[in-house]
Length: 106
Length: 121
Image (cartoon, rainbow over all chains, first blue to last red; front, top):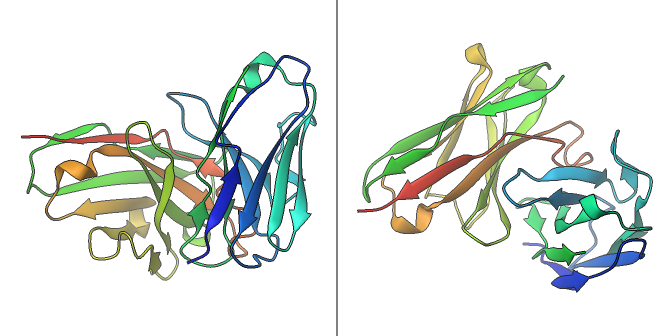
């Protein structure tokens, strides 16, 4: 199985800050990396697929980057609605695997 | 609009069987993979497995293979997650989600609202 190591596990930031969350895969995943936001009590929401493709309706302050085994989600100019837990997911090889999650507090 | 609607919350006793459902609408049900994800209370997301309704090709996570069964009924655009003998450790929220082809490229783009399963004696 491909292991996904996500960091940090938690993060406290202020409105307007820029934050970066990283995920490292245990082997190359051909950029099949997606990012999800989960607000407490809600289903996860897809933000970015295939490393850097922003989903329709997701604000452009969210961006994804990376290649090979190292990937990042960056949020510029944090907004109050950006709180929650963020997960990465590799969907290259089954079983698909999530990172451990990053709890973002604002 | 692509939409997934899951069945309601379930409360069961250890050893009982259960099948929860996930009905798709707004797209060609046969052509999108459907995955199941577990979230135990206060914990992260765990990918359980995935099925392609068109041919019922199914892949399981080793962590869940043999513990659950994933199936579909194409005639009613519905996917299922089934247990034969529930345990207290199956208490969790379960989500279904679509994944458009090609395999894995789009991740899991539309999610159901979740089904809470509680197993308690």
